[in-house]
Structures are given as C-alpha cells and as structure tokens.
Amino acid sequence: MSTRSAFLAAGVAIAAAIFLLRPASDLSRPGDLGEAVADMILANATIYTADPAMPFAEAMAELKGRHTMELNLSGNVVLPGFIDSHVHFIDGGLQVWLSRMDGHMGIANSLAMRMAGIDKNTNNPVGGTIMRTTEGEPTGLLVDAAMKLVFDVISEVSIHERRDALLRASRHALMRGVTTVVDVGSYFPGKSEKQVWQDFTDIYEWAHSVETMIMRVCLFFPMPTWSRVYDLIHEKGRMLSQWIHLGGVKAFLDGSLGSSSALFYEHYKDDPRSYGLQLVDMDYLLNTTLELDKSGLQIAIHAIGDKANDMLLDMYEKVVDLNGMKDHRFRIEHAQHLAPGAAKRFGKHGIIASVQPDHILDDANSAGKKIGIERAERSSYSFRSLLDGGAHLAFGSDWPVSDINPLQAIRTAVSRKPAGWEVPWIPAERLSLDDSLKAHTISAAYACFLDHVLGSLSEGKYADFVILPSTSWNEFGSDIPDHVLATYVNGKQAYP
Image (cartoon, rainbow, N blue to C red):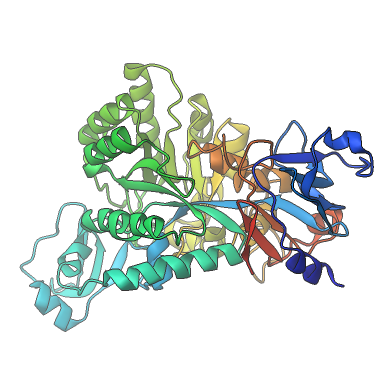
C-alpha cells in the first residue's frame, strides 16, 4: 500500500496530548510511553517540530489510553500546520478581483463614474487620488481612499455568498497545509469598516454557532473601531473558542508600490512628482496607538515604503517611551522597503515584520521600474537583515493578492528566484530552510499571541500538522514539494 493510501485509510487522530520520540528511539520499548497506552502512534516519520527543545522526532503518539493504531509513514516529512499571517480571507473565497489585486487601486468605467458623481470638478479625497488626463478629466483610475467614491455605489455581496466564501476559503487553505490564518478583513483605505464587523457577526460567529468552522482564524479589526474590539474582548476574552481568536486592530499608513502610493523618501522613477501617499495623520495614529497599547490591544499597521516604515518605527519607539516596556508585539504589515539601518530598529523593541515572500515573484521584475534598480536592490524584502537585527518574521500571503501557498513562499524565501531567473534577487537576503519554516509556524504563532497553543508540535498544543510527499529531510531540503499529502486540524484529517 502506498504511503498516501496508508495514512488516508488509517484516519490518524493525534490530539493535544502529544508524545514525541526522538530519532532512533525504539517504539517497541514500553518505557518510551511510560504507563500510558497510545491511541495512535505515527511512526517512522521525519517530524520537524519547530520546537528548539526537540527540533526533530521520528514518532508522535496520542495518549488517551483507549486503543492503539500504528501508522508507518516510511520517512515522510511531517511539519506543524502552517499559519498564514496576513490574508483577506473571505474576499479570497469570493475570488474578488480588483484592477490591482493589492486593493490599492481600482478602475471605474464611465457609467460607474457617473453613478458615483466623479467628474473633473471632483476633489481628491484625503488619502486618495483620482488619476486625471492632462486636461483634468478623470481617467477612471482611483487610488486608495478615492476608491470609496465607487465602493458606495457597488452592490453588496449577500450574507449567504460570504458564508459560502468562508467554506471555500477554508478548503483552499487546508489544501495548501494552512491550519490557521490571520484575517485582516475586507478593509482597505477608503472602504467602510462595517463589512469587517458584519463578517465577524454574520459569518464567523454564525459558522461557529452551527459548528462549520474547520480551521482556526485570528481576527484583526479596523483601528477606528478599536473601542468596540476592546469591549468585545473584555466581555468574551480573546479566545472565543479553539477556532476564533480576537487578535487586535489594523491601520494603513501608506499604499502600495504597484499603485505608486507607497510612501518613499525619494520620488518614483516613473513619476518624479510623486513620493507616494500618507493615508493617516501621525498625531492621530500616535494618540490612538497609545490608548490601544494601554488597553492591551495588539496593533498591526500597514507600511510598504521606506519612509512609511521609518515613521512607524519612530512612532512605536515613542509608544514604548511613554507606556513603558512590556510584551507589545507591535506589527508592521509588509515592511517591504526599508531605509538603511531600519532592520536593526525592528529588533530594538522586538517588532514583528509580517512579510509576504511571494510578492518577490512579481516585484523582482517590477520594483526597479518603479523606484530604480539601485534603490530596489538595497531596500526590498530584507528578510535576512530583519532576522539578524532581532526582528520577528511572520510569513503570510496577502491572499487574494497572492495565492495562499506556504510551500511556495518558503521556496521563494530560500531561493529568491522568480520563474526564469538564473540567479537570486538580492541573494544576501535569502533565508535558511529552518528560518523560513519557523516564519510560517512558531514565529507566526508568536506574532499573534498564539504560540502557547499553536506553531510547534509540542506537548499540550493543538495537533495541527501536515504530511508531505518528501520521504527524508534531505529530499525536502533539496526539492521543496509544491503540495501537501494531508492536513490535520486538532488531530483530525481536514484535507483531503
């Protein structure tokens, strides 16, 4: 029987009471399991635990004492379930497609502009730009907050469609080995905050009440609604259940590279008049962050350009000075382009860089055109520098901007070679396989205060894991596969 057929037929059920056996341990010795009888033994596996106390094991057991079933994996690699640190989850399930998938630029046809009342006399909204011809006529391209002008006249997706989208999104993520996502919601500059809260009550709470949740989510909410988040956590706690965790709040400081709205010190190469957009007032952001931090809420703020990242680092340092040292776990979402010295500043206060390796696959070819090759190569996706500077790296996809695919993201972080490239893009910023795996497992769990229950195969944690087709660690390291064979959540098979 093939390995795939064997584990599908066996229906492995490894629960939180995990017992690990080191490589070369003898499962036949009763003393290895103490006096307990194992319900299931996952044997002859190559288990990467992401736990520095025991990085590798060759067997896992569920200790409940009912009966024993052994599954021989013939060396197959087992990893902790992947955590995707940045998704717009329900939008991914809806397969929403904007003109720019990053959500920072949209295009409206003439009918949509008429419905929205956009013409040559319409002023740019704060934090947004209506792109115009040389005669001042709108072209239809709307950047960041300007998209709200059209959002307001677009028909809303029904609750039933969004509920179906959650299930589709969950199945797609599980197929890729993802067992937990950090959902930053359907919230973009210029868009109303209400959709995120409707998704929480009508989609997530509903799915939990009817017991249709099949994977874990950590939810972030728009910063302007932070008092509502605080009240919810005060009433119900951070863990609504094993499936739903309340993370914190998110805000935007700038836009994106592709829409020329990421905020830089120097102008864009293809538009000498533009340095990008600052989407929020810094006094408001500082004062709000101070209150959030005092209230115990985690803060995640989007910054892509080098100036935007420095502004956030300055602000976080002020918050620490005023509120004192504690376990803040401040997050910067994307941290895509960094000025010299910025990577070390992340480490000073243990700031989390929530990054998306697969964006490299596009930006390696396009960043030089936007900001110049020299600037792009000294500032972009500085993963190695961030780790060396003491930052915590958390990998994500930004799905549906990029596909949710941790194995591909790990391969990208290790090689930094887009399709067709013979040499890596910025090779000094490559990561080791171990660092990349941790950024998608234990470090990603740390980044959302879930490292006590997720992120590693350790005693007392949820038994979320994936089985790969690789049959040795050397095979896995030399040829990272493009798919998983199976995904387990809480010890139960969730895919296929």
